[in-house]
Length: 142
Image (tube, rainbow, N blue to C red):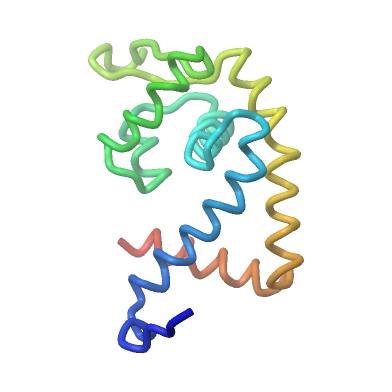
């Protein structure tokens, strides 16, 4: 394999390579539940908040609205997530997990835990925790 020295100092290149590696790792495990890593993140985020508006989901997941809507469509089609008008503003929709969504998330959590364990076995628990802190800080900095 060739070494690409010109890009070795590029933060974007390194981040995208790492993101692709992590996505493959988590999706290999989550595929047993029929979920992508993005879908798992959406379900887990909505579950933790119990219900969220689109704006809240966009902020929490650091995703643009179009990408999030595309990721939500199969979850809604499979009736894992539903929407209803907000009680505070009927023009806004609120997203919540259905009973099937909760079951799917319960099925997926042990698979996610296996992916977490595999990563920590590869890089070490301390390095994984440090990486997570740094990545979350970077995501919140924008």
